[in-house]
Length: 92
Image 1 (tube, helix red, strand yellow):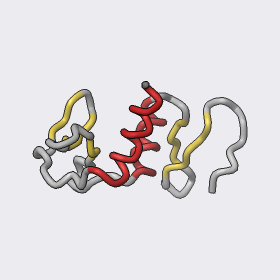
Image 2 (cartoon, rainbow, N blue to C red):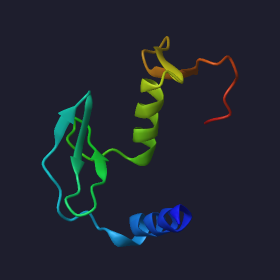
Image 3 (tube, one colour):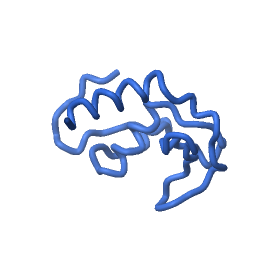
Image 4 (cartoon, helix red, strand yellow):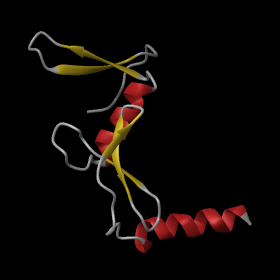
């Protein structure tokens, strides 16, 4: 029964809700997001630019909070991601 529920939820997320009714942005536990009033999904926001974060930005934010990667500044001053597990990453 839970497999059917998971499949239904997967397709509902893709095709079901257009997230037309959203709350205003708010911050809880260092996360800024809006919530869809129809389906309850959280849409993460950047508090600096006040725009929705892309999927890539959300994954990076969660990885940083989980301490999977460290952000270090390079000689040019630009941030560089460094994996903490000692393995080299193939990411571009």
